[in-house]
Length: 507
RNA sequence: CGGGAAGUGGCGCAGGUGGUAGCGCAUCUGGUUUGGGACCAGAGGGUCGCAGGUUCGAGUCCUGUCUUCCCGACCA
Image (tube, rainbow, N blue to C red; front, side, top):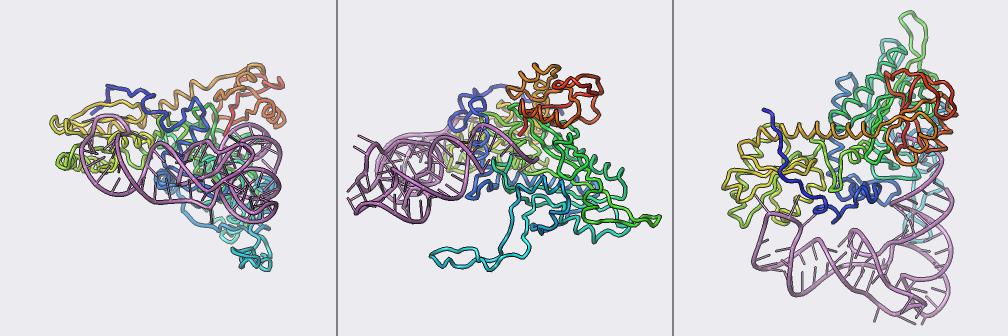
């Protein structure tokens, strides 16, 4: 049965905003930082650039993990775990990979502490210096390929389709909760194949897994594309990516999938014997998404009242808030609430009944809005008389009354409606903030702000790309897959170009 | 890593020229309340980021260091 919530009342923003949260218009960056902390997703820790992910935030990450993990397994992958520490020597083996990561590696040099002879506390024991320093993994290609060498002898050992969920460390100078932290959580898939075609196919398949997940579950529309040589992963022949547009008009890379060619196989001497008896190097891919997706989620949907979560990722999709005077009224309302919860759970909806007497209903309304719970059901004495409930949806801030018998069927439909409505809204935003530029002046003027995605011609050289970045801060986010071929002239050099590429300011 | 700003109860802040730390919110207790962040009365809580130094005396002055925010270079 189709169900549409009528907008009966829209709460004025001024009413609920401002008390705690900076508005997006005032200071987008500040809004984001405050929101992450106030919605109880994460907080900074005493360690520079390292965050504590709090239970509510981690619950969202767990949903992301669970859904992706299922998709990885459905495409034939299995999980494994490789060490956090990588011997320094492994790192020296693939030249461009070293270049890419050397500047942001944490290094373990000692393995023991001792009491500080000069007073309290402990100091590093200089006698306990490691013979070979260990790198805290910024990504695991090197240690994995050192291992794959042992796993692979024959074409019968291929393909290897492995994923790992892990933490990695990249010593970033400027950090922001979820968007860029020194330590972050991610998954990294590492596969080995007998042929180039199969490896490319794998990289494309996983990009598609990412894109589908991000669009269907996170309700974030993405562009699928290829990175330019300059933006490519260190050590890759080709980097596929999904790019999303945030509400402030800046782009955010949401996931990448790399065709690594035979670079790592050569660096770690991983060969296999073919059917014909010849020795050949293995073809590789790697692909990953990180807790940065949390940042994308927050910045795509949320508003000045707080977080807005798509139902498919909300730790609880519905919260029931009782409004009562005295214990008898609470008991009566609880009975109705328990019944609704049972029905909703049977319909696959996650529900929380907040019957705490320590906070008033108004306080709870604001709190759950801040935390982005998709649907709120309020039940008060008037509802007891009328057999009704008040249903409010977070994304539109609209409210409606419905009969209690309707809830079990109407709410699942409403959640679906919210899920698709969030995607549509984000897609509209992206379309409204995508434009073309044909001249340098036009391009330069656009890039004075954060214009969203700008489609423009480019002559295909890294020099031009770098020059454009230097002059405008804009980077080429991607060359869209299946891009329309269109003759034109590079906006900077005027050299011939066969297609438009996507420029934006990026996170 | 360069340039700026800031660190004082859980959070947000005040503390000219050095003299025994204060406000709002939150917390706790009691009572009245409960359809959009309740009210009254009382109470608890801080070695002022950390380490040195100057001084009879440092939240305040000096040096170093750590963390956070903003702006650049780097990056998922």
